[in-house]
Image (cartoon, rainbow over all chains, first blue to last red; front, side, top):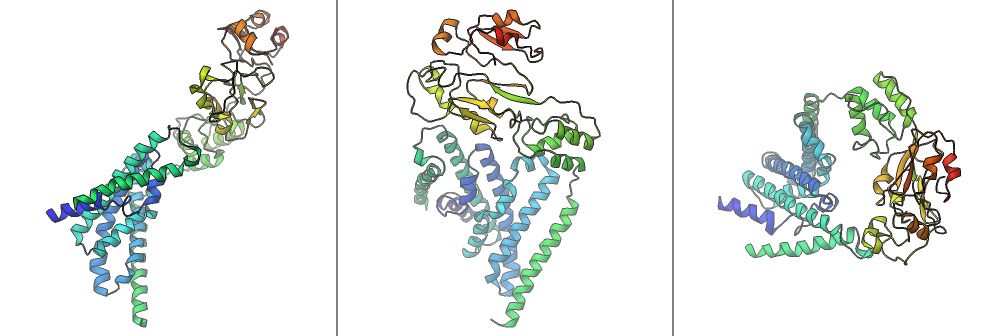
Length: 191
Length: 263
């Protein structure tokens, strides 16, 4: 239990996927304009990463490893993730059209979120078992959600600030991300 | 790498892909959501600018609303009568005659007609003028600021700053209403495309003040109100306004105006 907790905290804060591993930067910068959409994206990412780390864990343990073809992990994982996102999209469309509408275009965009593949590969690299892998996936996605929501909050404020012309738009966002990364660096003391 | 290795890799990746494809195909059928055919057809008929002039989130949202019967078939201001006719055909309804509208900027205080009180060197955006002294650097505090927030808002290149004031190109204007929302001075009004006479001023200041600040400002003398036989012109808060529903384009008010405010 304590082991799992350590993996969780480590993945969510100490090794925050965006701010210290630099994965999933595209949605982090692209969808963090408004708090609402940021939260929607975070929710969708939590959902997809948790399920995908479970399924990729299964495939790795029961298909790739026994067959001795672990070098195929990247391509197989991508296949699984793409299919999974498609499936989640269909499922939500049928079961909960409201949520489907709220997530909109961000749902299919998750396919290209490198954090999803990153988590699956990290699970293998750290040789986590199935449960540890799922916990790691969930915590990573949670960390992603926390940082994207924080970012959206800051961006909503800086939008109205008198920023120097040269820094307007993306530069100020990247600077903000940089400062956030330094702040998150403080979590490494938890180890 | 041996031949078996290549074979094995092909089988595993291909097999996984095939399984996932079957899985998706199966659930695609199972979770199939029926889409109203008419909605798709309506969406094709709409202009596709996603300007939001209809009040919906975009063309697809409007198509859905029309399909459900929540929105009228002529709800798209951009497409006008032509689109309404096609949509009406799809929905099996007759399109009423919808009037073509256009935006109009109620200010004529161009650079020659009014002067500036001070030079403004800040951010070139109308919304920023709320933070400057007097909320405008022009002498007339109600007039067009000329920094073009409306120009940026326009998706159809129909509004431009000419000589310090915004002017609408009636031929290009699709009456989506984006500029109306963008103008912090609330200068833009929707009028019929064929309207001939409009009051090109929005100043509610008293006559003397207007006289001092702009050559072509409405001073609220009520001459136009008196001369109009149809009761279409009314003066309220020192400012004349023409009700285009009642106006018959006789031009009497234009003749009577001592300040040449009525176009």
